[in-house]
Amino acid sequence: MTLQETQPPLETQPLMKLGIAATVSGAYRAVFGRFWPLCKAAALPFVLSIVIGAAGVVVADTHFTLDLAVQLLSLLPLVIFGIAWGRIVLLGPRSGAIPRPLLGMRTWIYFGYLLVYLLLFIIPFLLLFAGSIGLTYLAGTTAAGPDPMALLAQALWVVPTGFLLYLLLLYVSLRLALVFPAVSVDQRLSLAGSWRLTRGNGLRFFAAMILTMLPVVFAVMLFGSFFSNLLVSSIDLGQPGGGLIGPDGSLSLTAMALFFGPTMVFSIIVQYIAFGLVAAAVAKVYAQFSGWSETGEDMLKRFE
Image 1 (cartoon, one colour):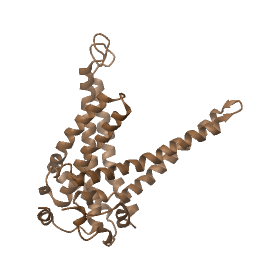
Image 2 (cartoon, rainbow, N blue to C red):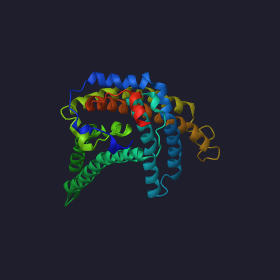
Image 3 (cartoon, rainbow, N blue to C red):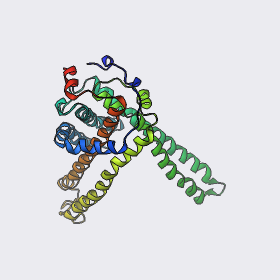
Image 4 (cartoon, rainbow, N blue to C red):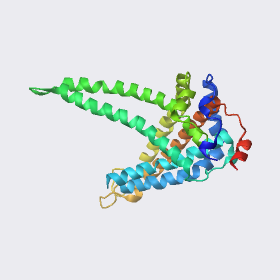
């Protein structure tokens, strides 16, 4: 089935009031109630993330184009996982842990939307950063030279402005996020259609996503700190031959792998659980707003 063949267009579906508690609880039930299907869907992308992450360490600071290519490639495992997990949430575990075709049109449309998301956050912050540098320079330059107080005053407004800008961009991105579960199940929905479907529910969607992610943030702060302290205490960083420094005074690649390897694996695991929660919450919102009511088996028969 192609995106164009799906009928009716989802933009014409009626709007309704979003249930915040139902969205949050539905996301957690999807992740931890279907944790084994989640693990199977994340298996291939997880391995790819580790391989690409290791490649990124090798090519770091070698060439800008190569480094950028690796950074873009690192999005592909999340795309594969997002599609597979979105299908499991909306269609059920029988939809499969690996989306087929793996690199078909669905994958590249999802990838394109993800790039749009990145640009949505990157470009405004680049403009804010450039504007702050320009204004700081203009305000801090006098006949006697730079004015430290003026420089400090100009720098301080960037922090609250950046925070407010982030909240605004997060709100906008959530209004557009329904394209991801739609693409996962080959439904036709544009960014404008996602915006219309969430009309009147933007703040409720925003609140639901914040409540979904708060436990993850607290868990990362708690266990991440414990995990980091455990690794640091197990390696004597300052003694040659006993830590990151080898007997000859050079960096020990083995010690670096033992130190940074578990940290990278832990961060990837947290990333996939958080991404799974976000994707599940968005899929639940999409199901409610779009009138998604077909059972997983009925939809699978249509895909066959």
